[in-house]
Length: 454
Image (cartoon, rainbow, N blue to C red; front, side, top):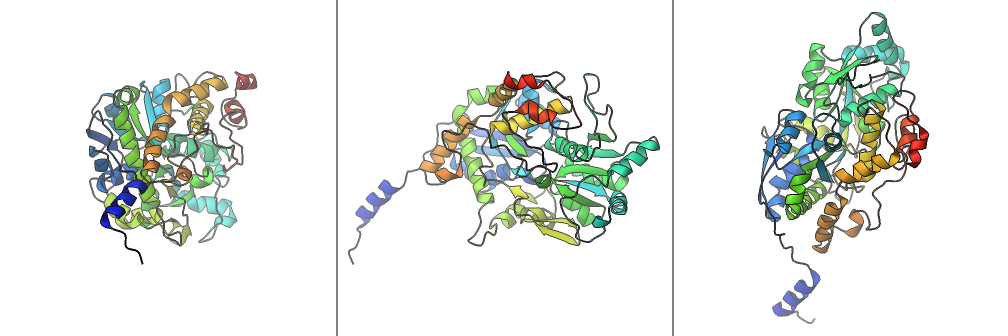
């Protein structure tokens, strides 16, 4: 057998691999904020596994008390960037709530939320629907069996209190979607009602994620929509029953993003690419599987996230959903390999159609108070989402052999996912037809279809 000399091997290695050179970043000491939820994982993992450091970045990761303060701290410069609700950059940019141009080059995850009801409400739902009287009822569970309970409370002059994490959160839109699909009006926002209670059959208000189980236990809320681990916490404590996940409300929906101000992005273009590279590596690590399809790094991720400076929940509770399973009841453990998606399905790419969906929900429920043409929806999405930054980061990683070209969209991709009917009510969503989508729902604002062509 012919031997390869050391010199020949070195020459072969140099020609076969591209050395990963660090970008000339404008700022190398950074502070990122997060809320104590499982889906902060890409930021935490990028720090703990050294991916930020590989890109020449020293990053401090700091827990924030609530979504408003997190956003305020990004805007005022206390934080360089943060784990954000998908709706936050969009809402801030159009001026709903705090006004500031926020942009995102990276979607942190898909799915990851659930809707949990109190034990009392669950028992009443079971009385209204015999098929729910099982240790393992058929899923998805709609809100149809909840409607008579809501109606009875209204007749008694009461509105059932429910919780979501923030007015522009995915959780707000998901629980509204779930309720409205069963004919329950979750309430409308108006220019004078920023709480969104107008004409509502229930009262849906804001509660910080870690406080959700306590509100259920005390009776302050009878249901809530939140990310993990706060649905599994309710199961573990025996105080509530998750009835659905957002995977069943909208299959593979975008959940959180990494957000910075546009001014920061403009001032630190190479830094933002470097950050995006590190996050892509973290997302890929989180979704890595063995030959059998088993997620191989999630247990380590849960050990890291369980630390008090990160999510601070028990490892076992975090691992319930992160390991590819979800407990709806202690008797109802189901395989849900896509409950948390951090990389596959082109999950991390900033798709314009994702931004348009959030805008349609803001318009549907009155947070956008006036009709807008379809072109406006596209223009806003393009002002917030930064696929060009993602692509620069991904191209560098592909050249370095870290990811493959098939793991992110092709260069000719226009940013719009194909139309889909993977919603709990079966209504089709096409990001290029926002007005048609808004008008397809029975409950909510309606607009002139002629705006579709403008």
